[in-house]
Image (cartoon, rainbow, N blue to C red):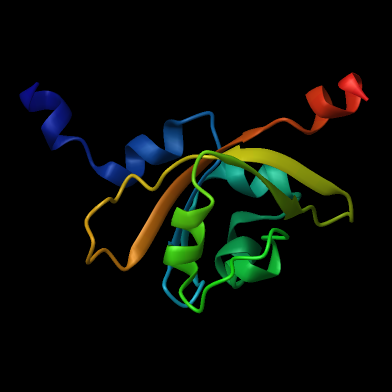
Length: 119
């Protein structure tokens, strides 16, 4: 367990095969792993230079991006792909759960192909 506690968080997030993004109250993308950028058809550098509201198609209905993302936790949301199509994915709850957290760290499960197959 001590070994796990010493692992750098960013190194762990980078190794995850699922899309991960960290977003500030203002919507600034602080971090994204390669899987997140790939799902959106962007480079990590391009995604991290964007405001997450620019790719989050589902209305956040809040001035705070963190509060808006928390409101949509564990639901199907829509994201913009760089080539135009809409990505439909289930977004997790933020891994940061305290009331005073000013960052949301969420993961996505892309269901686009599965939903297309179902018609």
